[in-house]
Image (cartoon, rainbow, N blue to C red; front, side, top):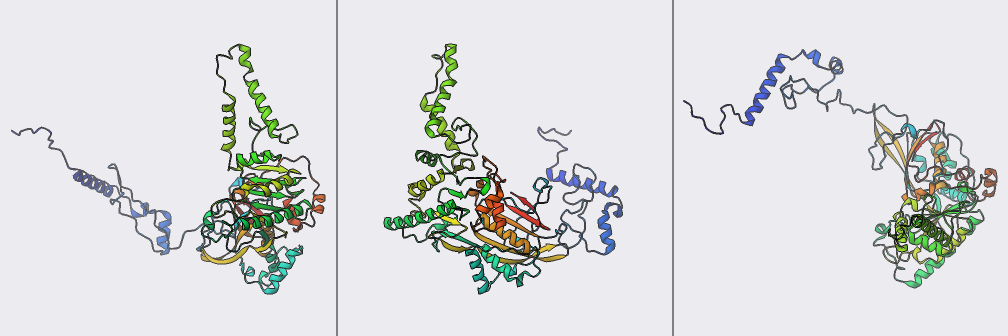
Length: 539
């Protein structure tokens, strides 16, 4: 008689034995129910076999990854196998690498336009974009070799055309761009901008977040108060010169780039405004308080009417004292109902200090954000000019940018300015196509690319590339909020605006675009595709 051992089961099997048993059962069942080969192979694979194409074999039915749970093992196709050895790509687009990745050190991003991004009407012009771009990457199926190695005469002619504000109108399509002297001169003209101060060993744009790039660079003024005074004196002269040109409508706009914020000054008539406007972004509570103390009237276009900001019926901002008085009256009225009920002594009211701290916290929360953008209009822009010239917070007191005046950027010449050129280079790459590889051509533009330069370049490339190209745009993010739509008091007569700004130095088509009301809000253009002279874009 067999003895029973506690905790022992005669039918117990070790885990490896169980696994082997299950595999054996799966193979036996699969062999019994295996259909003929012609029924298990997909139609595409059978057709490829008939055509004589080399194929990879299917994995074994009873191998790793076969049937599970004891059911019959179905013959599975290797998901990584291909019917042939050619790379599987989508149908070739008619132009541009917006849907392709070229094998090149120049990156091309994947752009796909969804239905909301594709307007139903045919758009032949891009919306105005007031942000500063740091880089543009144009791609096309036609070469950009015409943009390389300009002759000395072409370079000189382009400089003269810019200085004299020569209006050049190119044909709709240029048959042989490499032989077009007019195209190459206009391209040179489109790359010019004006800068102050000009220090060739220092990157003067962008200034926000530029400490790392400037670290280790020579800055003899950082510890020399006399030299700092000279630099700021020259900068003040240049800044005042630019504002006077703007006021007389001889300069359409300019930028003041500090290490903390950027200011965009626009002439009257641009962006749908009948007054000179200045947008400042980003701002802080301290900067806004300092502006109030100097008597500068401003508004916060992206902040709705709330407890810390009241506006009059006409839309102009109240002074700081009036705003505080209204706020205090609101607080008193909010607790008057307690007295009517006779319970004012039983409920503890917040004191004035706690209320003030709560309001200040709300203001601080929007600091350094796009919502902190400030709008200054009309005569207050002149007060802002004096405020910026005399403000000690305009220049960093420590770090790599210590003692360095803000950067002034303008499309036209001004006192103390230096002519600069955007950098351009063309690259030819090979991209995958259905039939193998094909040539893809790229043109890269780098530097502080202002709105007029972007429009001039797109007009020029529309002619040179026969109305088809793609572009990826890289904006300086703190300036994207300059595209917000401002509240306008009246509709401007565009004919009068263009006549008054005739001598501002811009091409009439560019001036017409910059006169439009901005539509992009807090965003900016990032991807553009031109097909048969029709634009699609994404912000």
